[in-house]
Image 1: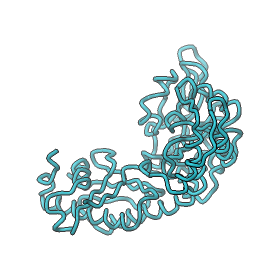
Image 2: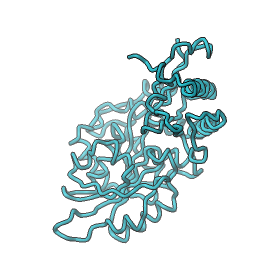
Image 3: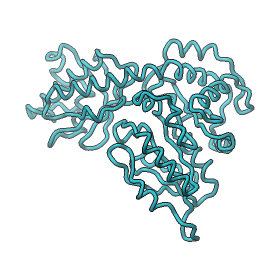
Image 4: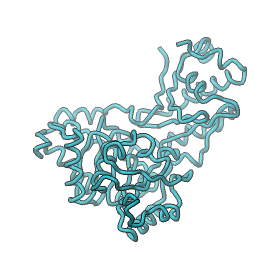
Length: 373
């Protein structure tokens, strides 16, 4: 049996023993009726952690972001400003336009996940019957498409100032806000203080099986709650899942530092291999994401396929088959996501396989080993 290293995403984690126990023992009620005590405890805990008035437990980060836009933009034909490489723009099926009737106006994301504030200012609409009304600015931290970069607090503060000067709201897609807080060695409310609303994912690095929380003012959450029902997000005895979320907050956050250290370990290991076919930027590895950049003429798709399969002759050369599962990002880039199931041994085995795949490329035999199925 092949040795498997799953780097596809930090969403692939499975509940730990403490989490399963908490889920089994959870006190539950009907959350649509407001009767689930465990959900209430999770929402209160999250709101307190981010120093906001209220929180709402929802099935996913995608729904959480959509609810935020629906609650901030209370009429069709309104508009939000957001990065062109943001998760809301790229990976949520255009939901804010599809379901909320809200126009996304993009700002060019810089490599660090920020955008030009003067550009943002220039795109805030004046009152005119020809234009949609600008209602909010959306930011993301950590920034997924920027390689898990930590967006500086100073930038977020300036976004807040810009928003205030034009009576706009600020929404933070903080799916990995806890990663950002750990990397900056601050409490999450230090980041959240400049935002009217924040979406926090429990099922990524924190390790819960499902769920996100949306936080904000009481009136904002009241509006989001109504929209959650309309979108089919009203859940019943969901304290079973909220219990997992509480364990995720208690035990998942302290583990993130180890994830970041393991990401650095992998990045340095790839650099030390000195493979012509692949490298990465250690300085750009700020949290739990490592981006593997292909060498000249090397196909990321082929590299990805070869890493993910046991090729002919591999077991003889390496002593066993190794499958390293990655996430393709582009024709020249593959993403590695470190999570709490990944150990130093996994990283050592992954480096072993990467070196082997590089050898196939250097010998000109990479394509010959492409899986036939």
